[in-house]
Amino acid sequence: MLMRSPALLVIVTTLWSTQPSAQTPLSGSVSDGNGGPLLAGTVYHASGVLTVPSGATLTLQAGAILKMDTAGELSINGHLAVLGNATITGLADDSAGGDTNADGPSVGTPNSWRGLVFNAGATGSLNGLALRFGGRGGSAGIEVHGNGLSLVACSVSNWNAEGLDLNSMTGPITVAGCQFDNNTAAIVGVPLEVVPGFTNNSASGNIIHDSLQVSTANLTSGTTTVTTANLVSNVILAPPLTSIGPGATLVFDAGCIYKMPHDGQIVVDGALQCQGTAASRVALTDLRDDFRGGDSNKDGPGIGA
Figure 1 (tube, rainbow, N blue to C red):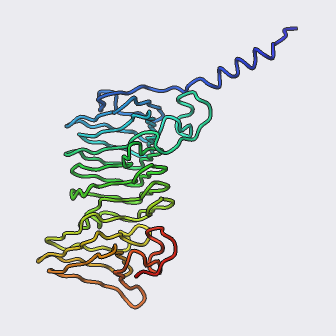
Figure 2: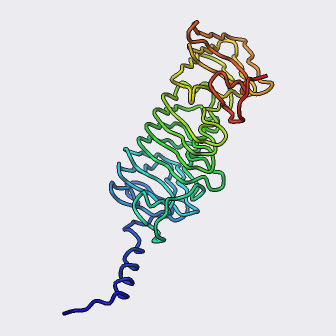
Figure 3: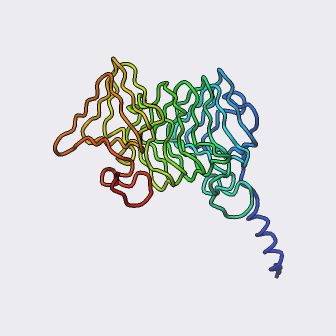
């Protein structure tokens, strides 16, 4: 009868359990035809900053997983296309692609990599992308300096910075059905004129706020209409000055809540229309007014002043 050594079994089991899961390495410049597209069911391990060159496209197929080391960043100068249910996360996040770094069971932590950066001239069409466990160096989950961006059914979670920072970009923007959870803040850097491009988004568990924060509100022409579908967590956080110039119109639909910081003001040289009803009023109020829209600045109970 063949005898098996218990010690040998333990050693073999240990070695087997710490083997890294299969992965494809990536570094430097990457695009379709040069390391891409990133394929469904494949785990990719990025070393350092990945760059999508100007004029090129990088496609992530549904089911692709890209795992970043601590210096990881995806810097887009061309176009990024995500075709559904792809994941970009930290190397230690075993819930995506298994134990890629062979360090035993781990769940990932915020600050594990940097984030996505859309540089000047870059564009993106992101459908179903999940970003997790980043924010190293204060990088937002998605930081935008580019020309246009579409985010549909995406999520940014467990981030050591803001989930989305538009940096006052005024190009075409669509953000629909996205989630921003457990980050430092939800959405920042949004010009008032692009707020109508946000629809049916949600945020929870963020440290500073769970809302959409407007960075600039200087309307110079046309009509900007804000509806309750554009709000995140029931409100919009206003900048210190909202300016409606001659020839410009700002419309708040019934139920909208626009919360102003201390000393905030709205200067109207064009037209301001508040289309509230007795049952669903428009509120232009103090950031500390928790009666309308809840504790938007997360400073505890307050009634405004």
